[in-house]
Length: 496
Ligand code: GLU
Image (cartoon, rainbow, N blue to C red; front, side):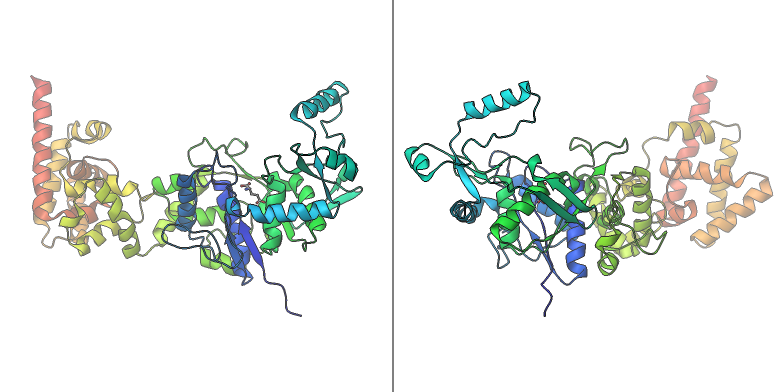
């Protein structure tokens, strides 16, 4: 017997940006599908027309793209036409399926027409509240006879699912068997009086007709899963496997609010994080590797080692420090060329005239920052001084290095070092600085930091000798002289 093909899906509602929780769900489905040679499907749950916006569809798809989560089947996106044999992939285009399946349930007696009006339902709810019962539908229309139904004529009706007696068990890969007494559910509506399918019907019909084999999603859908299992059975679809994973919590342990910066996956791109970092980080938000203690994973590696049984049950708390650390590590793991290609557009956006420079020089400039920058965006502050002379000097730095009694001596010594360097490269500069510091009994730190402030206007940045070498001898010396004049003017000013 051939095994049924693994088919997983992500089914976002395009009513907002790509939330980090949705990205996590998508990643787990994608990894599982890829690790099993299965298919990964993108389906848009866009039936809520008021909340759906094409701009969110684009933002979501773009988020997936950025992360490297591609789909084998899905709706039209940008220039790409719809792909896959189970379409359409937007719920708004699938209402005929929902109608057909609801009709089937009606005919089989597994659903019934409910003619209760809004007012009647509200009255039932109030009555239940007075009697301190949960607000369930009383079942008024459950057993209407065909004559009674015919007598309703054109009266609008909703369609309710006839919840069977007994117990429903959701066999969940992560949670274990989750049992629901069917009494906990009332006969829920599956089609509204205007003919629109309710989420529960739509999602089950879609999963059933699309032959989804595994439903991996957030555990906020666990209670829904009871309803879904009943619907799968009633519709005669094979039951998929369920895996409900915990939601992502923020650093305070609350559900990661949409309003927080960073809830939108693309915020991280904006902030200079790598997609590799996010993938690595999100993977570890709810999954552990069999290799204990291992922290670095690429998408490719994850594909080979992902298993559902290593998904964790406890909520994942967002840890910004860990994310930042991972981002630094992933920046170091890029090749210098890859890093250059990623940061050059950022530098250009910040008006650094990268196009006037040689590629080789740019590569070196970027390389000396690779070990230092925590995010791609930091490249700007770490390299802007290469493109223009510092307009000001860091205030704290000025007090520490330019306003000391020895400041002039430090600068002059550094200038001499530069003048004496017979080759203009970082090794020679380093050797010269160290020799002069020792000869004049000046702390090397004082020489280095004074030079850094003079050349860059800052107190942090790439390695000093490396940046000095790349700046070029003439430019470096010009900046040193400029700083010397500045110091002398400052002390002149304070003396008068
Ligand atoms: N549209 C639902 C959501 O975004 C997904 C439902 C499901 O995965 O079954 O939460």
